[in-house]
Image (cartoon, rainbow, N blue to C red; front, top):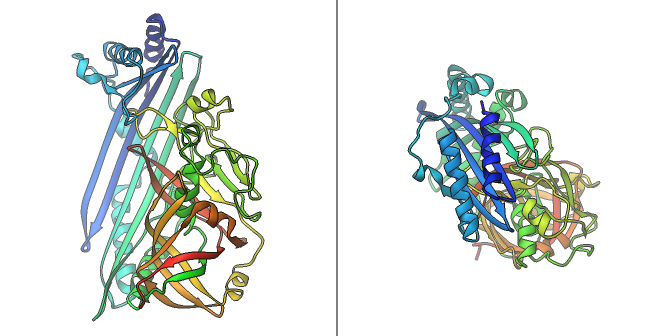
Length: 469
């Protein structure tokens, strides 16, 4: 798949030009996605990309360039471009490298390995179509108020080889599968839609782990339930976050602030707080790239360092941050295996993997019975967060009023408004269940797969924005 001798010759060439350090990041990605809409297979797309990114460090200056022309001439031109970039003092602000293809005339690339990759991880096309039609039938038959359904099965496999002039040579293969189901419900007064989309770092084994009928029913039930939603009240209330549902809130409001580049730049509310209490003593936050089959899991990060389990907050005390090679060197800290990049076209930066709050000891039913009035958040929508202050706003896509310990009417137009540190400190009950949420994390123009998770928990008081008069 990758010509390691050619890559080694490329690194030797970089050294001969006077680079203190050179790294080659080789990537091949194969993907296929099938979508069903209006009861028919709407699209089936597939593709494959190959490329190499070259990072050069010379006198503490960093240069980066990339190419899809994987030949001796192409890779030498890429080294030249990276060295020029290092010589002028850095990379582009976006974190994207120089496209060395602009300087290359030789187009003799390595043969495409798409057919080999497809055979190893993809669900057969006919089986995929059968699964999608089954999902469509389950959604539509759930309730007569369901008026439409759509579903997508997307799979990809990313193979990477990382070599550098320090002798590093590692390979990792990263398959991922995601199922997305959307249900549309309508009655005389309202139209609602709902989405459910689990993902795992698995090939066709994904379908052994998940019951696709249950996923379809979850999407259908949520859409139908929201038809009867009432305007959400406003105020400061206890908020119960269902297992998995609040993961994205903590990912955005807390996780990014624990990335060492934000710490180094002083752009995090957690800067300078290591060793101090930043959360309730019920809270332990972990970033773990080794979690089996999770969406953000890998063997090696995109700098060739082994994935690790990093305890960020231990029993409420800030324990550590997440690091890539650049920040670990600058801040004199051990590498944590959090150097990631979207593709070979980008430089690596500090990124989360699978970030979650650990289980507690409370029972879910006890959290509800001890809540006289509050909001139960089952699913969050979009949101915004300021990592410098920790302030956030998140929409609730599925939520309910809790009254006298009982889950009552669904609500609409609800938002959660708060501060990451205050929210962590106000967690007063943590259950012994657990679930995760799979998504794409965006940062500085790059998106990478991550998961976030937590057990069912209660925040004693949060500001809830609503539309009720």
